Amino acid sequence: MKAIHKLIEKTRPHFEKGGRFEKLNRTFDAFETFLAVKGDVTKKGSHIRDAIDMKRTMFHVVIAMIPVLLFGMWNVGYQHYAAIGLEVDFMDQFVFGLLKVLPLIVISYVSGLVVEFIFATIRNHEVNEGFLVSGLLIPLIIPVTTPLWMVAVATIFAVIIGKEVFGGTGMNVLNPALLARAFLFFAYPSYLSGEVWIYTGLQQGQQLVDGFSGATPLAVLATGDIQNLPSVFEMFLGTIPGSIGETSTIAVLLGALVLIATGVGSFRIMISVVAGGLFTGFLFNLFAVNPYMEIPPYYHLVMGGFAFGAVFMATDPVTATQTGSGKYIYGFLIGVITLLIRVLNPAYPEGMMLAILLMNVFAPLIDHYVVQAHIKKRLKRLQNAQVETR
Amino acid sequence: MSENNTSKQKEPLFSHRNQRLLSNPLGKDNPITVQVLGICSVLAITVQLRTSLVMAISVVAVMGLANVIISVLRKTIPPRIRIIVQLTVIASLVILVDQLLKAYIYDVSRQLSVFVGLIITNCIIMGRLEAFALNNKPWPSFLDGVGNAAGYGVVLLTVGFFRELLGSGTLLGYPVIPNFLYDLGYENNGFMILPPMALITVGIIIWVHRHRDRNLVDIS
Image (cartoon, rainbow over all chains, first blue to last red; front, side, top):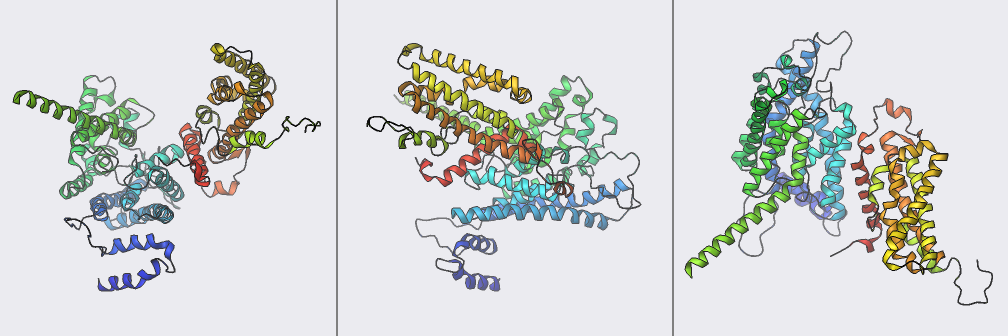
């Protein structure tokens, strides 16, 4: 600890005004606050000082993502060896996945942070920590086979167009991680749908097992092939093909516990997304005309990115609604629209991404009307009170 | 240049004022990046550089001629029906252009489809007729029309250039991305072909433009 402080103090003069690296002041600042709490003292008024700032908040989210990440890594290996019909032990599966997922994480962090640092230096504002989360979310919501340069392009696009043009962290309208995925989805459709979910990478003498399909449960359902659907338990556990982090509902639930316990993620949004999904599922059951509409509503919660989106994406504090009841409306509509896109639109098997992005756009509107309704209610009460006292 | 320098009142053909009529719309008074007009067609027809080029030339022709015609007629047009007269003039010219395109470059005309006809509703043209041609002599009106159409065309070509280059890997239909890049795993960006990316490209052009010309930044 002391060594770190010493290092910081020793290098500080170089980055301050007149120093050799004056221009890189913001870069230094970012690393300083990352390593230690800054020595700033409150100068005016009375304040309650708390250790929690944006950096620590974001770190809680990163911690919440660890179960998902670890499970995702293992699942990559598991799916790979299952596809080529090799039986290997747990560690082999995990290490294989680790080696495949790690480059994606590194490339996403590096490309995003480079853009962030450049903008912070040019505009002379602090480097914001929002990207700590986005940079880990991006690898978790893409297929493991996505080429690295595409991840870099999508990340740079999302950070510049999704965030920096609006003024950086806290100003963005759309969730940057989802924007990166949407960019990939529309720019390189053949890499984000079809048989891309499992890394096969056949070497000499290897071949795919008979009956290998590599389709996600949602893709299976979209073709109306109900018999080949994995069991609910498999889907809940997450041993199914899909984006790296989205498959395991149980790992996502662990993350949700961390988020709710630390108060970082909004439980209102999570609950209402689930409620919206279940509600629409029931409606489909009532008016079912095809096998897809007949499946039990809770299936939707464990398939695809529903759980992951509800816990990690919809609860993004910047792009979600801010008001309490607004959060219920926002979440509920995400659930509804997700199922509408999934079941009724054959072009997109998964609807979570588009539903959240759409509701991100509507979030300020919802907030506006919630606040207006509140003002109206209070005003009425006030007027009634005045009438009575008269 | 004017040969009779004896009459002092006569303005030279390319006086400072007239030059500005031509050059302002290209830069600090650009109809798209500054006035944000005519966005619709920018999103629709810039998938390829070729269509953008044909569209830009068509608009230059229509706008230059329409401005001249309205300017010539400006004293005879009754103010109450001026919009109808303007529309008639633009529509006639657009039909002419459309027929020419159909006769000589049919494939491009097919690709442009309805958007040639929609030049009629391009608000840049109507705006310049109202704001300039109705009050000015034919020659300055012509320059103003050509200048504004060129300002529109420059943005159109820029957007078309990037969209075709990144979206299809070609320029004017010729492949320009070397094959070894494709072998390395490079892919054309399908998003560039979709209209949202045209909007974002225009946005980036506006961003760059305002960054270079700080006078345009509206601090309010």
